[in-house]
Image (cartoon, rainbow, N blue to C red; front, side):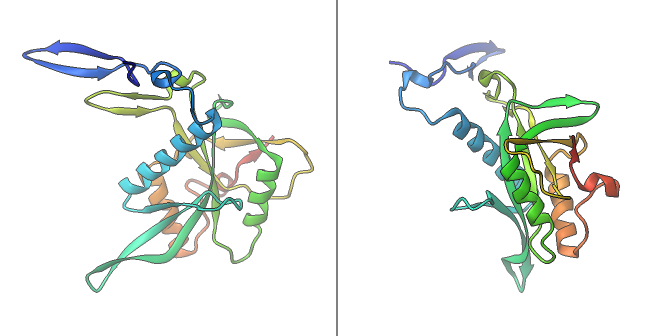
Amino acid sequence: MDVPRRLEIRRENAGAFPVASAPRWPVGGLQRMITKQHRQEQLSRAYVHAVAAHAGLIFEPATTDYGVDGSIRVVQKRKGRRLVCGHSLDVQLKATTHWVLRNDEVVYDVEAKTYNDLVDRFNEPRGTPMVLILMCLPKKEVDWLSITTEQLVLRHCCFWCRVGGTRTDNTTTQRIRIPRSHILDQTSVGELLDKVRKGEALQRESPKSLLCWIH
């Protein structure tokens, strides 16, 4: 009987531990699988879920598809109860293997309609802020995820940025450049939500890092 992944037994000292090797495709010989795009999307959601949880925040995936893939929300303690407060950050998630790291910048061609949606949200004077979160995956799907008894490894990571400025006239894609320093981790997501709470601009180092660079 086929199993999702082949198990190898490695003996160390007196114990024996099963270690999951790289999965075979299709997994377990299954013929019905979600698309590659949906597998990428699910991994990007899992990444944001994990980072938000580690930062003590809540990630709520959107239940409908109207240009927002989810929201990261702050929980506060009030009179002995923990409640979701009114501060949140909307996110647009993208996952891809088609990205390049060049001169400390992540280069990615985002869909033109997505780019314009982000620009429109940026230019809303009193709207909830929204960032693009880009999951950069390895070229080979077998390298995306690995699991052992000691660790779960999801490669590579997510980067965040705000897209602003003017709308593009391109009909297919718009190239953007995200500073490599904009990695999404428990520290950066906490800083972003703290700035949302204070009404400050979403930036980490300097004003120029507020936006993705346009190529």
